Length: 188
Ligand code: PRP
Ligand code: MN
Ligand code: MG
Image (cartoon, rainbow, N blue to C red; front, side, top):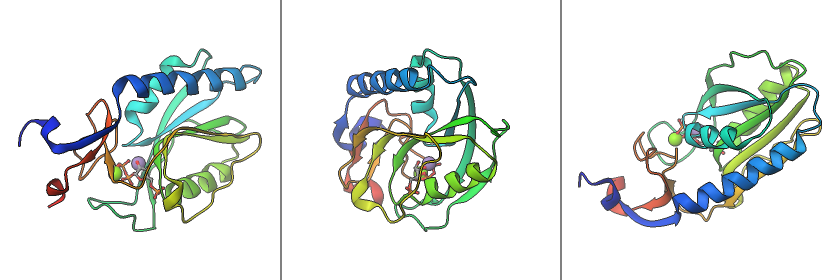
């Protein structure tokens, strides 16, 4: 089918529900970083985090820098190969800075543990994580935040392969404004 909506079995979080939750996360971040002397750096993990990052930072009422890293571990499939690669590094020097890693989803934890180690080695003074979705049932690696870093999450995700709002299957469906589950026939 060429109509995008026809590829989706069900919607898990609507555009309005996501927007509401993003506002709440942005308020918490605004409050928690309001006494920091240096502006935090929001680091989006490309590609999946692009929409969440854009919506989140617009709702944060503090000076904040924005940067991206690119990490890949899924290729075009639906299962992590367990070896994330940083294929594009930061532009901003995060030495002594408060970093907020922004993700669309935390699944095995491989991507985040790789990135946290990397940012820690660059001398970030704290590392927080803000993820729209968290799938704790799939966790294989536990990651430790750095310094005063906190973990912010939008929703706990049931164990479906989800797409939309940045999340892809084979690089498609990222442009859906909501998060949903693909029809099984779309995998083949
Ligand atoms: C996905 C997702 C997270 C990561 C989470 O990215 O966007 O970055 O996997 O999985 P993990 O916790 O098991 O590491 P992906 O590698 O598919 O790249 P993409 O963001 O370009 O889609
Ligand atoms: Mn990603
Ligand atoms: Mg992906």
